[in-house]
Image (cartoon, rainbow, N blue to C red):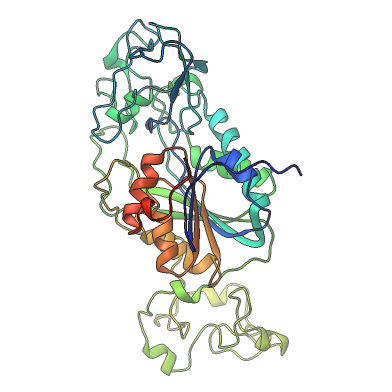
Length: 416
């Protein structure tokens, strides 16, 4: 396969490398099978504009105003750290042009695609490159949130006809970040539909050959309140575990939870054993000898002579089986969100990549986030002694990440 030059290196030291550029193009320049674990949260579809667009052509001295499609103009960002036009580079699939000098707005960021399928297809291109750079036993942890179909103000002629990200009543205004993103979510679905974007992406990647091992529910105990009256408020996001093959690195022990009844271990009633396989499996020695390692049974067929279903009937006795190292945390993770007092709007809590990396990346391995943002995955990787590769279009986000990592870009002389 033809190798493309990697995007400019923004920062590099012994354990951290940050690239500035498009995720797909940058990944194309990385060597194959060089990454052990990927933990990432791409920009969600139609949620916000991260300000990575640039103007090409026209008058360099022009302030640049682009039409919204209804004769209006795109305002400049009011955020002190991000001085950029708040509108998407493409609305409805058509490139934006400055209505003063004719300059063209260019932007490679994800999340502003015209339709759900366009968004899915762009992520598939990223994952095609991830498949190449990931080791055969590597893991990918993909966090995605959902959204409801909505129409930005100015599209219908009546700004109060727009539904919100959360699918509120027709009279409710759009969230500011959604309004600035300017994506018409009703292009593919009628208003107030839950798009189902996480599962659209998951099924597309599954069709591309990825193995979908887990669909983890990230439950947010402190989720943002929603002023909705005709549906239930949303308090979760999805986290998918994907692999290239059936055998992959996975160590359950670092993320086990304390047993509710630690005394069960002393009673000799445990699940599993000390002879754990390479990929975190159950006691392989016992299996070879024909024994069950689940609970107290020592026969290959512990329920011989019993009618089917007997083992599932309530007995009135408390279940006491437990693993000596703790219990499997399961696929519902209750993790509170954490505010980030920086210019990046959507950093997930470090607890998520800490758990993913501990279970899915070998010691001394390399962790990658193709949508690095504020480098939350990098924080977790460094804390756990892994190397980190981060890719992002926005240099300002890399600066935020370096500050959070306790690093200074001046120490290495970043690439221009």
